[in-house]
Length: 72
Image (cartoon, rainbow, N blue to C red; front, top):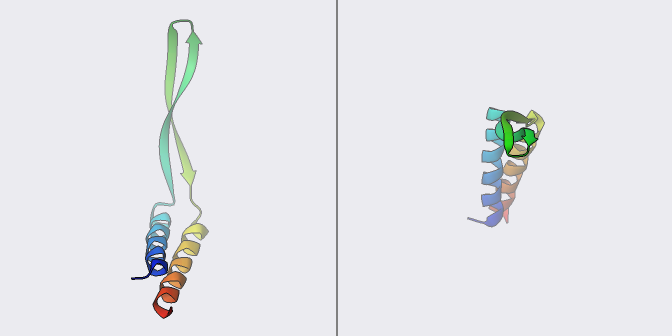
């Protein structure tokens, strides 16, 4: 299998995952109070949205790479 076809398959899988999940969430720890030896922290969850158009573009580009990899 050619490298272009492999890259296309990877793009298709990533694009479908982006369409399915539409974003990801991660947790970060922030220091709230820092007074000498006393520290207070808080865990906050942040969400990074992935627009559906990014998933669609990745799938289309992946299909194009797979087709180009089969031709060449």
